[in-house]
Image (cartoon, rainbow, N blue to C red; front, side, top):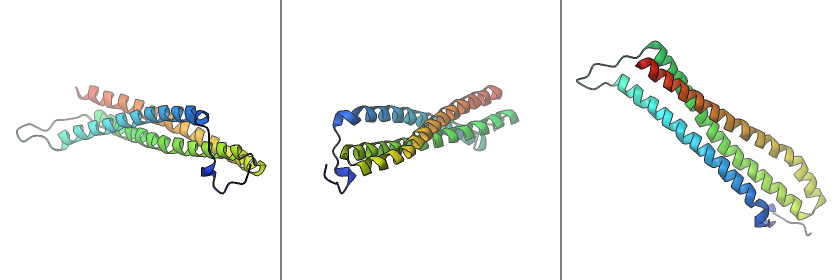
Length: 158
């Protein structure tokens, strides 16, 4: 095959990457849902904080125990961890897909030099796949821990 000036000009068959993009979309949809729920948790904590800091004119300021405050702080921190993990996952998973497509295009050129480069770059691609997996796990764990801490704060406030 003739030498290609840009890998972007190497045409890939749609059926070769179709499943890869479907999997990426599903993982990113899950990550988006984790992000949405984590942001919802942060806004719930913000609502509680606004009621504590700015009670109504005719109502006495609500009281909250020290344990509940601690669980609210933990919940806020863990929701922030979940948000960061979700955003990191979305970035790294898209980045790993770009490395994957680049490698496929290098292999498709049929050039031995390009195949060697693709083999070396595969290590970067797998590092990003692992990082993506860890980010998604961190986001899931952060969301679950934040939700439990928020529930405990609410329970202690009753």
